[in-house]
Image 1 (cartoon, helix red, strand yellow):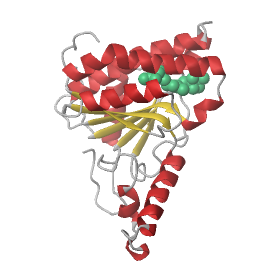
Image 2 (image 1 turned 180 degrees about the vertical axis):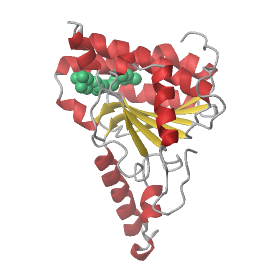
Image 3 (image 1 turned 90 degrees about the vertical axis):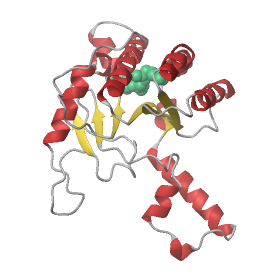
Length: 251
Ligand code: FPP
C-alpha cells in the first residue's frame, strides 16, 4: 500500500461510526461497462479495498468488516472462484506486512472447514501476526453467510447444553450473540452496499438488527475515500433510536 494521504477535511471533527461493514458489489458490472473481463473488475476491487482500509484507519474507524466471499459465491464458474481465491492469497501475501505496520488487526469470520488448507493457513497467519494491533480491526468475511453463522452458533449452543455447561432456560439473545463467529465485536453501526443493489444478501443478519443501511450507486472498483465519507455523512443525518424514543444520532 502507498503511504497514507493526509486526512480529508470534509468530515471535519465529526465523530465517525465505530463499526462500518461493506458489501463490495459491482465488480462484474464495472468490468462489463468497460468491455473488460470480470476478473479485471475483481482486481480493481482489491485496489478499492486498499484505499478503503487506508481511509478507514485515517478517519479513526475502529472496525471495518468486508464481505469478501460469500457462502453462495461457490456457485460461480470455477475459473472465477479460482480468480477470487488467488486475489485473496495475493492480498494477504502482498499486503499483510503493510497492514501490520499500519496497526491493522485482521479477523476472519465465516466457515473455514471447507477452504483449501493453504488459504486457511494464510488466514490464520494474518490473524496471528496482527493479534496485538489495535488501530483498526479489519474483519474479513470469507466463505461467510449469516444464516450459516447462526446455524453454527446454534450447534455450539446445543453442544454446550448436551455437555451440561448451559441450561436451556438460560438461553437468551445475548447467549446466541456470544456464540457467533466473532462475539467480541460490536454490531455494525453502518452497513454500506455499493452498486445500487438494496439487500443484505445473507450478510451479518443477526448483527444488523439496528444498523443504518446506506446504498450507494457506485460500483465497488470506483469506491474511494470521498465515497466512504459521503456514506458517513448520510449516516450522521439518520436518527438512531434503537427501538426507543430518544434519537442518538451518529456515534
Ligand atoms: C461483488 O462483485 C464482489 C465479490 C463477489 C467479491 C468481492 C471481492 C473483491 C473486492 C476482491 C477480492 C478481495 C479479496 C480480499 C478476496 P460481483 O462480481 O458480484 O459484481 P456484479 O454483481 O456486478 O457481477
